[in-house]
Amino acid sequence: MKINLCFIFLFFINQQVFSQSSDVNADSSTNIPSFQDDITSVFNTGVRLLSAPSDFNKNDWITFGSVTALTSTAFLIDRENREFWQRNRTKTLDDVSEVGRIYGEISYAAILSGSLYLGGKVFKDKDVSVTGRMLLEGLLYAGLTTTVLKFATGRSRPYMNEGELQFNFFQTTNDYLSFPSGHSTVAFTLSSILSDRINNTFASIGLYSLAVLTLWQRMYSDNHWLSDVILGASIGYFIGKAVVKFDDDSKSNENPDAATFYSQRITIFNLNFSF
Image (cartoon, rainbow, N blue to C red; front, side, top):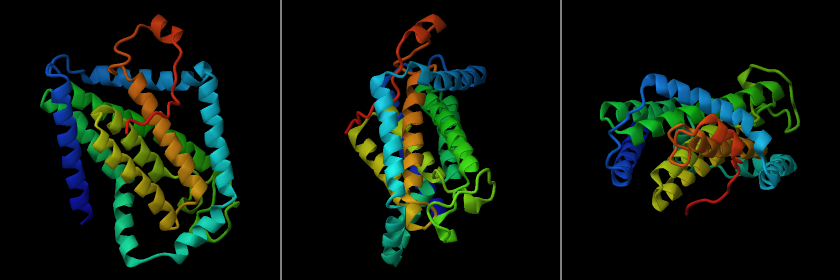
């Protein structure tokens, strides 16, 4: 059942991206990036992500502060939120939650990303291949961010019953890697990038619904606190948006020279959903 769900979703996304790319760019088969181009793009995207905070404007810092405040506030209700979901577990919800878990699994996300990346090269469709590359970039950089925070904070998972404020810094044991949620990061990275690339209202609604389902599943399964999933989702969403903007083949940033790039103000934190 799990494998079937994975491949059904993989087929759907491939169909959506392939059909969307053919509608938008009939000449997308030309100038397929080489593997060296892809490696260069991954590197350049990472440099741009690292340097982006130095170019934040007032709205960027307000949004950053809002995410920080929301995560901090969630700490105040983490325990009550956990107790609520543990009191309301049902067999039906158990089955529904499995879909959210699968969507946030890094292994399935890697299969999807690799399928689009290699599929685009095999079928000579630049847009599809670049979409796969963006997904791989997003999973790499968002994943690294979340992983570093997990190891550094060492927060105890809810099922350990040690309380929401138990931190054992610099841990590698899974039981103490709660903050932030990796599944939530993966889910929102996928949804933010695919939503931008497909650029279809109904696809966006479906993608973000799956991401929210993953967020809920992590709390429902007692693997994460509310504050964990809020920060994890924020990391995935904003880094996903930034990757689409910074990628070398982004339509909004096609092959800019270094002087042009560094002279422009870069805005990552744009909360304008397209639905």
